[in-house]
Image 1 (cartoon, helix red, strand yellow):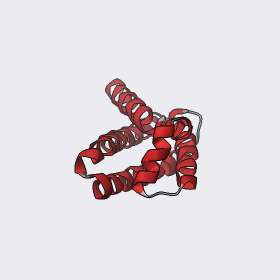
Image 2: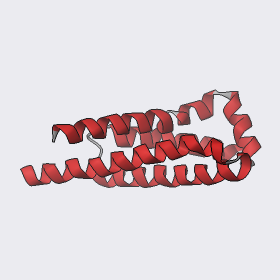
Image 3: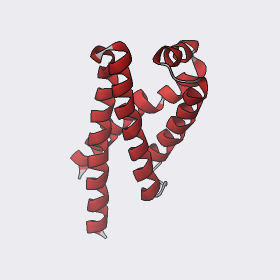
Image 4: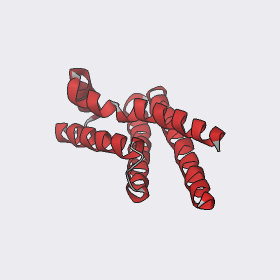
Length: 125
């Protein structure tokens, strides 16, 4: 159980650091606005995505959030990173898709260990 918690928190922290915190950067860094324009996305999409990532970051990290909301946050992040892989590959080439691939892998491991911890909690009760 301790190993599962360590794996969960390391992968979750890294995924949220790389993926969730980018929501703040979308709003604060002019370079991010330029990157979205380069990819052909409208500016409102950058703002919408930033808000969704910030909300998702808190939903996944805060332990008191109900499991159903965490499931939706994981799903949302999964869709975002799969879309990012496709967009980066199509517009700039595969090399730029490596970061979202890494985050998607971390997110997948986090999700797997989240369910292992949930199952252990249910079994313990």
